[in-house]
Structure formats: C-alpha cells, structure tokens
Image (cartoon, rainbow over all chains, first blue to last red; front, side, top):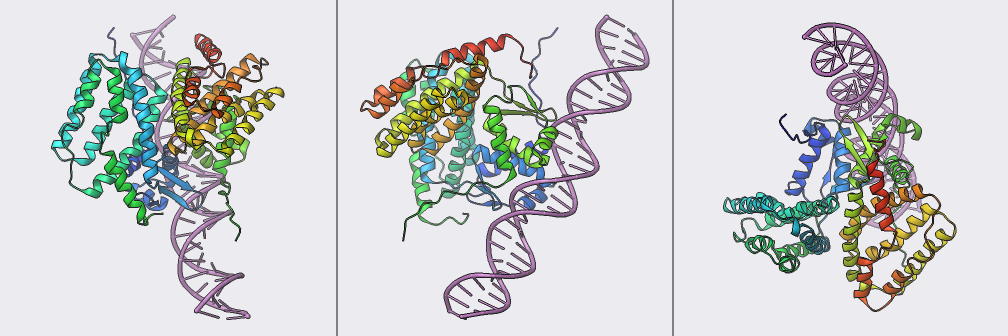
Length: 230
Length: 230
DNA sequence: GACAATCAGATTGTCGACAATCTAACAAGA
DNA sequence: TCTTGTTAGATTGTCGACAATCTGATTGTC
C-alpha cells in the first residue's frame, strides 16, 4: 500500500471566506484604521446574509484587528505608537525564545525553506510589490516560530504578526514608493544558518530589521493629527 | 470640579453574557475537554436563539479554548501534555519579560494590590475552595503583566492563562481534595517586593510554582487512555 | 440664542425558519 | 463477511424579518 499523507481539506463555509477577505482588506490597508464596518453594506457587497458576516467579524475582533462596541459598531483598530512599540518589544522576546527552541531542530528542510522564503522576499523587492514584500518578509521571520515546535508560541506570533503587517502596510502606503534596500535580511539568514545561537538571538533582539524606527516615527506623526475614523 | 474616573459600563448584549457563562463552564471543568457543544440544546437551556450563541462560540474558538470543525460541531479543546508544556514554557518567558518591564513601575499601589491578591489566595486555600484557589493564584501571577504597561503582553498572557486555568481545574478535579500547602507564593511575593530584579526573574523561570510537574504527569496519564470526547 | 424633549432614520442585536451537510443505521451486492 | 449505496434523522450553516438601541435633526420652551 502506498503511504500517502493527506492534509485537511479547506473550510468551505461562507464564514471562513469572509474572514479571509476581511483580514486581507484590513492587513493591506484597504480598510483604514478606525473605519467603521457597516454590516448591511458589506453583506450586500459580498452577497451573503449578515449572520456569517457577523460571525466572521467576531473572529477578527478576537484576533485583535477589529474592535466592537455594542450597538455602536465594529471598527478597524486604531494604531497608536505605543501599540506598535508594545508589539515590537514583545516580538523580540518571542524571537529570542523561538530561536532557542528551534536551534537544535534545524535540518536540511529548514535551510531549504529558509532560502526559499528569503528568495521570495528578494523577488518581491525586485518587483517593487510593497504589499507582497511585507507579507514575504513576515513569512521569512515566521519560520523560526513554525520550527520551534511550540503551538502556543506560533499562535501568539501569528496574532502579533497580523498587527505588525497592518502597521507596515499603512506605513508603506503613506510613504509610497520608497522601497528599502534589497538584502536587509542577509545577516539574519546567515546567522540562522550558522553555529552561534547567541549571536542569532542578539541579532533578533537588537537589530532593527524592518525599518521599525521609521514606522514608529510615522505612527507618532499620525497621533498628532486627529484620525478621521474614531 | 471633582475629578472622577468612570469605567466603561458592562456589555449588555446576550452574546457577552453567553461568552462569560461558557468560559466559566469550560475553565472550571464543567464542560470536559473534547466534549461537543450542541447549539440547539444549549440555546434552549439558556433561552436564547442560536445566533448570539454561535457568535459567542466563535469568540471562544479564537480565544483558544474551543475548536470548531465545519458541519461537524464545536468542541472543548483537548488537553495534551505537550500543550501544557508549550504553554508553560512560554509563560515563563513572558513572566521574565513582564518583570523587567514592570520593575521600575512598582509603587505603593502595586504593593498593596500584590498583598491583596496574595491574601485572596491564602483565604481560598484556607476555605478549601479549589476552583477559587486556582482563580486567585492566576490573578496574583497576572499582576506583573497588568503592571508591565504593555497591552499586547497582557492580552497574550490572558490567552495563555485561560488554558492554564482549565488544565489546573481538571487536575484539581481529578485528584479531588489534596489542596497544596498554604504559602507556596510567599517567596514569589517577597521577591517582587525586593530590590533584586534578576532574582525575581530567576524565580519566575525556575520555580515550579503551581505543582506544574504533577499537572504534566496527570496530563500524560490522560493521554494513555482514550478520551471519551473526541 | 441656549437648552431640553421629541422624533425619524439608520444600524446593530436577536429571532425563527429553511437549506446544506454530516452521521449512523440499514440494505444490496460481490 | 466485507464493501458499497441508500436513506432518515439530527445538527450545523445561512437567510430574511423584527426588536432594541443609537444618532442627529427638529421642535418647543425659557
């Protein structure tokens, strides 16, 4: 008998598709922070009833990218500089933990996947596809969490990442075309391939990989002027 | 003018109440791991329609204590020893991070609150109220996260805590009356009041505060026999 | 003109019914 | 006996309508 592994088939509920659609719209900045989501309007646009839409929105509220006020509405979360700072500082701690956990689990498959994802970032950069660039960069950084063999860590990181992705997308959108240099992740990848775990951890903790300072400055700027949404 | 602070008034939706009810039932072990939640039955018991119940269940799925399979049902999560181990090891990292962040923010109000929560644990212990004992112990440990002034950290810790509370409740339920000694948190509280941050961090990382080893052994035992739920 | 009371419109929360899907029991055939 | 096809019942997913609540404009009063 042939030994075949099947992965679970995709969710086929409207709810799941709505979640994916909304999440993408939020994380790419199509829906602005603070913006209210009108249930009737969205349900008509998607040609679904409000029930699955509302359930989908409940999920995204728990995911932390929407916020809901009873009888008032559901809104895209507002981005404060402090949120970004909080998320980023926690992210560093998680990175360090993940590296410690996955270090001994590295194998050829890991190295291959690392290169594959690194390549994806470089290609997105070459193609000037900023949205995809953010997506691929976060996927590259997510590898250590996927490899750490700790489901709770992975889940936590994914929640964090949602927000970071949203922040970066907004930032990119604001400054338009200025795409960062091509090989910002070179050192990171090299360290993950090497033999010095402490060095890799130090890099994760200290290196500002994704123009974080600039992102923070941008967010601080936003806070000085009133947001139109909330 | 008197300077008065008002806290947000309670949510008045059925959904919010259902969430609270279900969460409590799960975290206290009233609903067993793997158990299926029948929507019709529960909605009739609670005298609500399925719509708010389903929305509430969606929230708890995202909260990580329920799991849903399309067209099959929504179930209480199954507890594996690895889950517990994963949650606990991450928890240690978060504790360490929280202590670092809140250390300089400690003030009289913090010390008072620390004592208050410690007292609550001791009282629950004296009264042999195991459920409340778990609840208060986790609240005591949560203080450092509340005080760390990092909303993302706090949120993450609360998610983690939900599961730990569930695990401990199951454990307590299984071994019935054996209540641990009264002052297991004495050292922890003392260190948080002291001047040696590193020592407090070390304690958080190394000290098995809540009979964790025993909990793990219990979970491993569960896995050897088939669970009735899933 | 300032302020409170009222009201209409819009939006969210909830309900009951129907459609889609799954499960388990049973029958038919190799 | 094992496998496959069928079917009935139960359960989840989705829908359209109604109830509860909020918001902003309007009216009336001082």
